[in-house]
Length: 182
Image 1 (cartoon, rainbow, N blue to C red):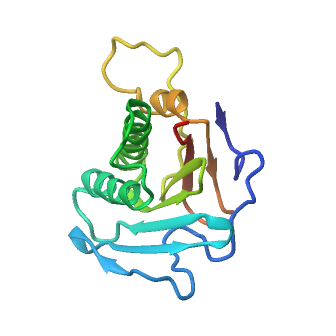
Image 2 (image 1 turned 180 degrees about the vertical axis):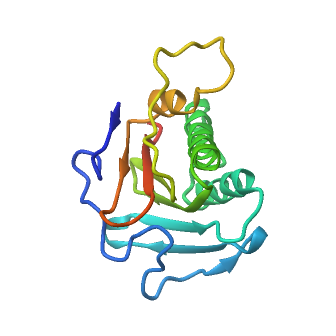
């Protein structure tokens, strides 16, 4: 489902200071990654865990984003996977990360930041960029043609996805939510 809602149904909405690239007050774990990108790991109220990655000055952003997401999946005990369903769920998260960051590279001027949020049941991936376009699955979807499959893949793998735009600010945040394996 393609939406332009800022939050998925039942979501508590953005918390203050949870803008992509923002560091929450007192956030532990600021560490440098490849390409000079900074990561921040924190826990928020209600047991939600948040990790942020800034792409400022980074090169190779798609592998950087996948590695960052993989580290988060290990920290959140999604990996190593004990069952095939758990492994598939973790691989789906990594694929969605790749697709959203790749789309920011191809259709915007590259990603600015990525935020991963995890609670017991859902992982939310947010990728911010400065692009003005509106992501949408290509219709009709033609599986045999090269290119244009990114948002179709996101739509198929995710519980929901959408776009957040802030008035008077250039760019957008594309978000997608994936369910934890049973």
